[in-house]
Image 1 (tube, helix red, strand yellow):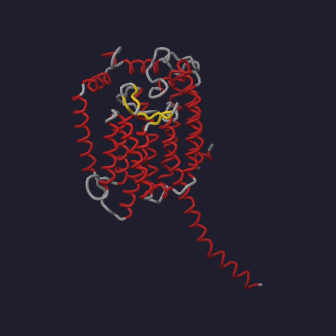
Image 2: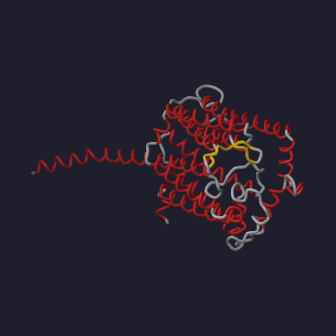
Image 3: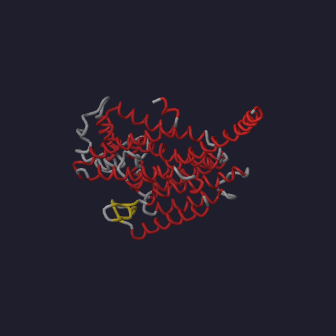
Amino acid sequence: MFALLNNPKKLIYFLVVILISIGAINVLSASYLENGYAYFIRHFIYGAIGFTVMHLISRQDYHVFLRKNFLQLAYVGVLGLLILVDAIGAVNKGAQRWLYLGPFSVQPSEFAKLIVIMLSSKILGNMLYKGEYISLISGKGSRGFLAAVILSALVYMQPDLGTAAIIFALMLCVYIVAGLSYKEIFTILGVGMAGAVLFTLSTPYRLERIKVWFDPWLDEVGAGYQMVLSLLTIGSGGLVGADWGQGSGKYLYLPESHTDFAFAVFCQENGFIGAAVLIALFLLLGCAFLKIAISTRDKRGFLLVTGVSFLIVGQAIANMAMVCGIFPVIGVPLVFISYGGTSMIVSMAGIGLALSVYNEEMKQRLQQETEQLSPQTRRYDLRVVGRR
């Protein structure tokens, strides 16, 4: 176990396998009454595809994925998919967010999260190398900002305000880590808060969501229904939880029990101890990303790993906070634990990029160590030859 802690690459592989397995068991429990083994099998299929994608990407030099031509092609592709969703996407529960390919669905907004991180890392990494001032609204930095705004706007039109906000937040996090000035940070946060207030007041159902966020029991059979059931489901788990598969949350028709609110079912069946272990696993995953990031000398690689850690661990914390009522309901999945193929594959592709950064850093260090030893080896060989 200590060997895993000292090697972030092995630790990440170990944690990914553990989390996918936990997620599969949880998805089976949460969805069996409705769809039998269907979601369970799909979860494993998505996990296998995602694991393969992660491994293949990790074996490539991440600089290939940060090349200008690749990023332009990827961005245009994601842009096209989002436009296609807005035009012909399937409508489900009042939102037009999915493209269906036979029995499987694709959610292009998930791809937008990763491409925003990659674009920001490329642009800002190059700026840091040149010692240029990091800004959202001027210079080269405005390109990443504009790219994120366009993608967020298209996602918002679906409508999906939560995912649109996450896309923008991921971009902003990378900019902050890169050295965005406090003035711009506070300005963008102020504008964002003002915009959030305007959006909330402009639509009655959003205002109702904020009200039930503070007190779900104000409308426990209406707007607060989902949060009330989520809190009751979590609270009934106690210290050690109910027997596996016996949690009553799904019987009480907790909405999205196998997707956005899968953590509530997990808490009920595994209790406070199980929830603490799951949180610890995600924090351990964050520590592995942090270890890779701080050991990476390439600024683009550093920003890329940082962005991926926000994508995986940041979203996990946001989901668990949402399910517990700390954050309002924003529709963010709990990667590995929630059912969601696109989210799973995109997240694991991001992890593959982080592992690629680690592999390239280790190669460079080994090469430098070899070059430092080579002259000594040659001098030793010369002395041996002279004696002979």
